[in-house]
Length: 202
Image 1 (cartoon, rainbow, N blue to C red):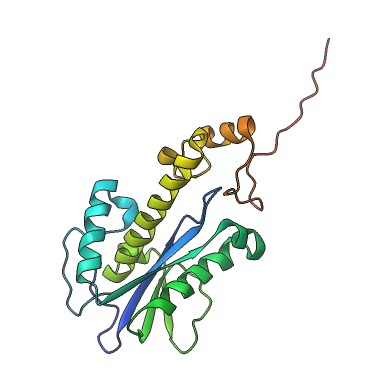
Image 2 (image 1 turned 180 degrees about the vertical axis):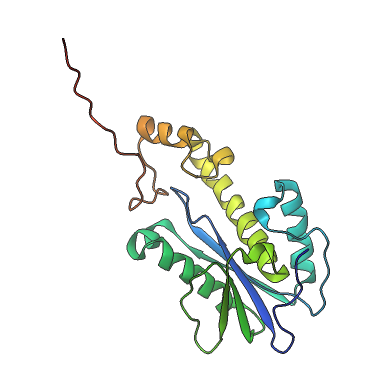
């Protein structure tokens, strides 16, 4: 069961990102401030939930949260500053948009670029431990999936509605056949290096 709070003195915001390992599209992040003693028995790490449950929980989170916000860093920015910095920037953009300023940030993972004047705690697998981080993971995932569906509608050959722009075999085969799109992250290894084998005739 997820814990409602990391501590009881400061107003917490949970932060998480989605789309870090994809070959195309933006990285999304969410910051969520939940009410004190918030309860939701369905809330869990977004990766452990079906798409239907994530979408249902998104409605509940947006209804119940004291405040929430989404930050986005597109593929061009990712190529310029690298995906790690882009993930931090997306979280910073989400935090900046919160209507209530949190007093402590709970960050999913083990690294973060400090946000000005707000202390933070990095929590490995935090989306499976604390409600606010789990809520942020759900919002980041669902908002990104919506964007990826729009990408798919524009470029259906890559089957992004199914692979969500992750490096699946089908996605890479489409890159081989159709080339790249304006959404692809050109700093990523879009195709694996191919070993050239010299055939020896005996």
